[in-house]
Length: 129
Image 1: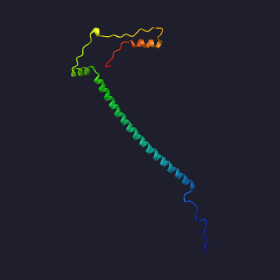
Image 2: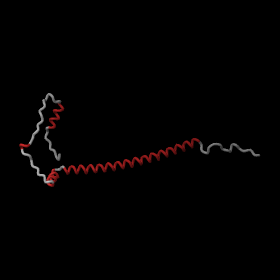
Image 3: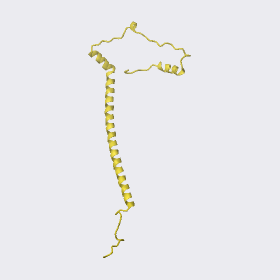
Image 4: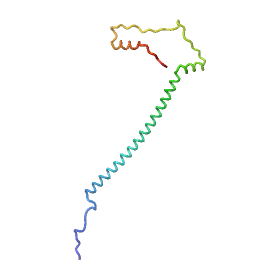
């Protein structure tokens, strides 16, 4: 009988352990990259949907604001009054009730309140309010 050469026979794995560890590390990194890409795509689509919703809401807000501004303009108020046959006149002088603010004692009022009261007495033009 012939003897078998034990040196030529290999025992163990075909791929060495360090190469297997490197290969597993590369596979894990690739899976992480794919997962991050999928997550980024999902977040991007959610952001796009939210921006579209915001644009729709802003458009509706602008429309309602425009509608309110046109409804409260003096010309549209006069037009609505004439359509509903409402005749409005200025009241007579005797029917007016004038309200006056009670005078405050200067020693009881804090300084910032005096400044606010002075600012409030400045005449301003109010448009459409």
